Amino acid sequence: MTERHKKWVYLLAVAVFALLCGGLVWFVGRPMIALAGEPEQFRAWVEQSGLWGKLAYVGIMALQVLVVLIPGEPLELAGGYAFGALWGTVLALSGFVIGSAAVFTLVRRFGVKLVEVFFDQEKIRQMEILKNPKKTKVIAFILMTIPGTPKALISYFAGLTKLTLGQWLTIVAVGRIPSLIGSTIPGGAAGSENYLLAGVIMALSLVISAGGVAYYRKICREQQEDGEEASELPKAS
Image (cartoon, rainbow, N blue to C red; front, side, top):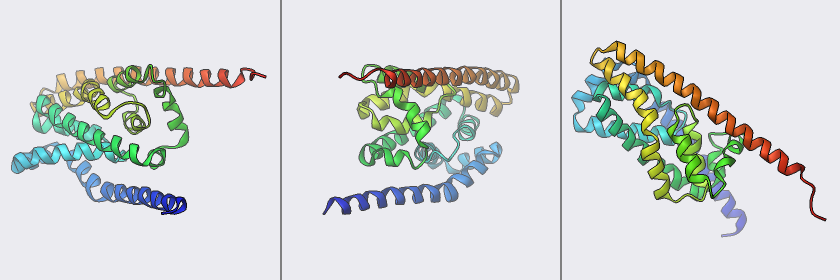
């Protein structure tokens, strides 16, 4: 196969992936978000489905990582409501790990073109902070731990770094917990009709998320300033 043919096969594969994601959003993501928006119905569906309901929820959360157009927050809240805070967290986290493994593997195979299916060049450039091999693990862990950071973008960009699959999944498994419990605990509290606790945790999560957004913007600005300073240095003659 010539290089030109390889390029066309590569682009076709990325296009098929994009179309598949669009189909999953429409036929799977949209109905699941609607169901998650009705907590009582979601809980009833889970109870009727038994073990398959738990496995389906894990699959939904994995799909949410793969197809970033599916919002995760309603599904996380619904998981806490339906399964309780503990099992909602365990099941959602399992889905995150599975989805993250799939995304990492696909990006390693198809490169930045796959990332560009969901994110524009400006957002991708913001993730250059993860390219420093001495700081990649630390920064990736911090960004995954703090609520409010763009975890979907980080998940896709991770495949472009020097991280191994094992390192990345460890970061996801540990780093996802704080932001996840900020959704499953309120969901579980609402499911047990402890609305005061649910409201307090949600308010606290919003405050922490605002701090996370501010931190992320700060390090992005610093990264941009460092890049501008480097470009202004005189070249060696």
